[in-house]
Length: 314
Image (tube, rainbow, N blue to C red):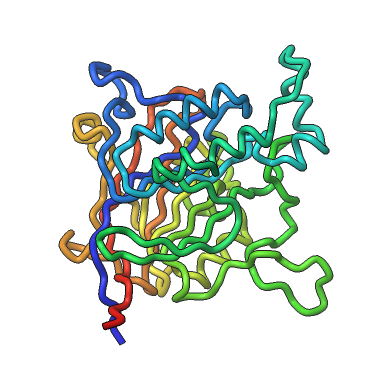
């Protein structure tokens, strides 16, 4: 049975590390005001540099001002105060003490910022790990799997040992079972994770592919329409995978066009000339705004994509 769909525009950013878009008059950066309008804004984590309240406030104000009906946000490893167990009960607070701040941030106040009434009124939805379904005024109804977790990366938040599989159903003999395994196709439309899957837009400037093997295995089962992430700044880009051949087709961009549009873009909707074949293809996007030297030289991504319509109950 075919599923009725509606076109939606998505604005995807990640790894802003407290950098707001530059002024509209800036002559060197695509990441400048105003951010492109969209139906859905997705932020794939590393909102801040190191999780200070003042940093979150700056990014909250930026997202609040963005023109999008729905704004989905996950934390990343730098957003240490949103991982309360790590910050309060672990070593996270040391990152503030070592910087000369001898009092801890108020983690409850920070979480309230992202989950309170002001956020809801602005269309901001804070997510951690799990599955959620959303609706748009256009009639779109789509399901997202989100996760801020990535393989251990020095002493930062939301990390797990590389051998741990938190994304796939666990065998019966395993004691520590994955709490929120990613469902099989066709449940999920969009995957929003901080870290990349292994081998997909995850190569560092040293030539190492550092994405998660278990996440890649999960995405091959899930086959979402879109999987967006960040974390590896130098992996910025987009491409589509054909699941039958495993071929990866890089999305080519024009530097001058990206600067003019204030974004890199791709249209994989039915009206875009080369529509995405859901279940047979997935579009992957690494939307890190910062480059490897923490300069905001990378552009946001705008993706036009078909999302399922809410079933007609009449």
